[in-house]
Length: 295
Image 1 (cartoon, rainbow, N blue to C red):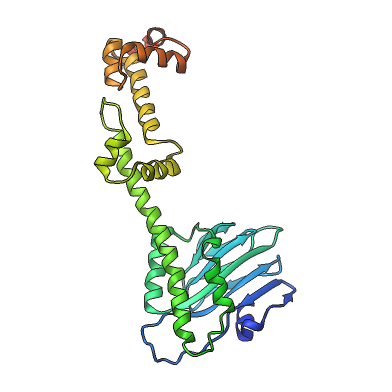
Image 2: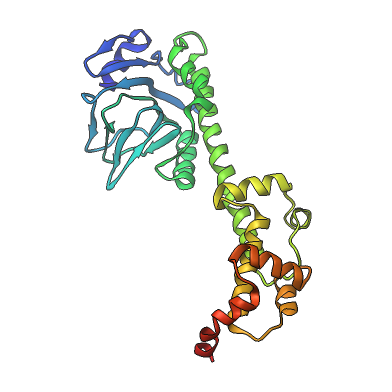
């Protein structure tokens, strides 16, 4: 189906039994620019259950699918997954694959096949960083994808313009996923630091100085992955340690409060009662058996 659409070029924009498609304007490489990457084919599809692409030997070139609406069911070699709205799928070249709508609804997506040494290197980095399917809203680069379809690349300099568009699309993808990969590194560092045996209250100002990121960026990255803020995470760790000390040691409330980052035993007791419904001493008494078992 894609091959039929490509042969007809940008004028092919009519309903078919499997749905609606639009494809890019075909151009012929002059061979003048050896460094240029090339859009081999691209387009937009809004298809029903009759649409199904199966390539036992894989495609000659890598394929990227940007889902706008509905869901696509995709298989790449031995991996099978669905791509929903706001997701992008990467299908390597020369790899068995098949794809089609993943339910009763229409599947709307953009797609692009491409070649070129630089583009292939970027594609390899994308798969390494993001896997075969990842979150990336097509809306973020929809204008670029639309330009791939609507621009008349047959004009002078068309192959240069097509290469620039392709590189912009790939660069935007890579920047997004490299940023997310970097975020994972920041959060991993924070988790190690917050899990250490620090008894002093953690402040975002202290974390800014230590990790050289703004507190806003750290809070946003941490919350995105952990569902809470760094300070609340640290406080949960300290509270869990305090409960463990109550159950397993003979430390006084003053000692436990100090080791858990509380300003005083009174402050610790008040917050403990609010969270657990019993005082620290009652909790300790209720868990005396744990201490005997440990000893």
